[in-house]
Image (cartoon, rainbow, N blue to C red; front, side):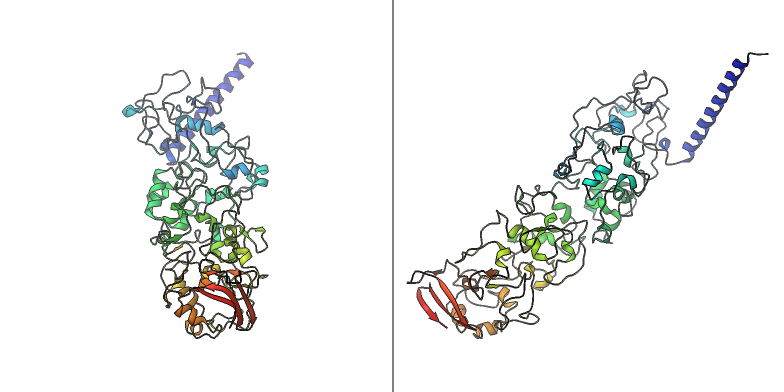
Length: 592
């Protein structure tokens, strides 16, 4: 009888070999049967691979990445030569800095992916002792023109290799806890780091782009596994059934976006494309927010130009008076000082959060859905988020900001802080923050305005071609042909003939006939028509702390009287007196 020990060792070897053969047979059949397997994907660089880049004669699909003998020592049995690059330019942003999160050099599985995808290593260079595998058509490295060649500058690519754990979630409210991700397909590595393999499965291409789950035609569900945008599903963008414009789909196809497979197959809506309408996971135009375009406003205006979105906002920014979105447009950061940023600027994202903005209407002074989720400055001066009133957004730049700029009209009582101009503690103010004080002395108001009405800043500062002005454009203070972004014309200098168009902004709410018939001030017609005095020569439309009836004289046209002062006093309803010099006439306590 044979030695029992030798017999059983032989039997075990035979059994193991049989099991291994059976496993390989099963895997071989599985690879053949599954159109989504690595064998039938562009990751199969063998001579039998389906892609345009493949070997001249090598038929082993696995050897380009793995080997069972003479592996490099890197898990899992890694065979491809590693890149020698040690100084990749990685993603960074002010927001990550605020979270104390520094993106490291690529490591782990991401480093393995880059051994091909940074374009610096020959595709056929393996470490198992064999000669470099020759590729067809003279290809050596991944071609620089290939969208999948990420290069060594990764600042426009989704960050990888950082620790994504519960500790990060506690600091960042807009990501989900990785312990409770909605899809278990998205995984961190064994060190709790986000890697390329968190979103991509290099062996499975069933969802396109080797994604671990379907991410097209459904509002970017892969992105939302990690990114917690609680208000996104109710936002105007998430609900839009308008087709994504061709300019966006073209960038998606050439930029390595996760949405590329579906774009090739069909035209999708804004809602279906989700995050990919504005963001790219690889080769983004804007490095700090992974936006498609490097010019921030173009990510908005590509749709809001009257083609995709019905209203042409882009046209408003070409007018005489605009919010200057092209000046310092790269400066915006969600974590900047909202009142006094390092570089003063205004961009679309300062006034609209594209992840939250919706179409909910509102009445003055409340903020509409278009301003949802934004930071504002309350009437008392404190920062508030989310803002509740429309004026709280305007106050961010036009109240306590140190660089808010001069007024267009020189005043007896200079004041450019709109928060203080509209203060209910003033003697007079337009009713933006609170109902006005002249409860019985504004007979010129046109219905539906009453002395109990509240108004928006945008009742005056608005597009001249929007619905509020009788046009077909978009409402909002984007731009106007009238300075300073006025909805209708308002002459700011003396010497102009009175007309309905000259003071159209005032006559929008105040009946022209009643103003000129002197029902509230017996010398209105004489001043405005005969002397060609502008409304703004006597009145400051925002508010005046120390004078009633919005009287704050334009110091260019109104100077000291012979008594050495400029003074207006109210002596009762529709009564008062002036001490000043105007149009060469000296008034000393002149009563009306």
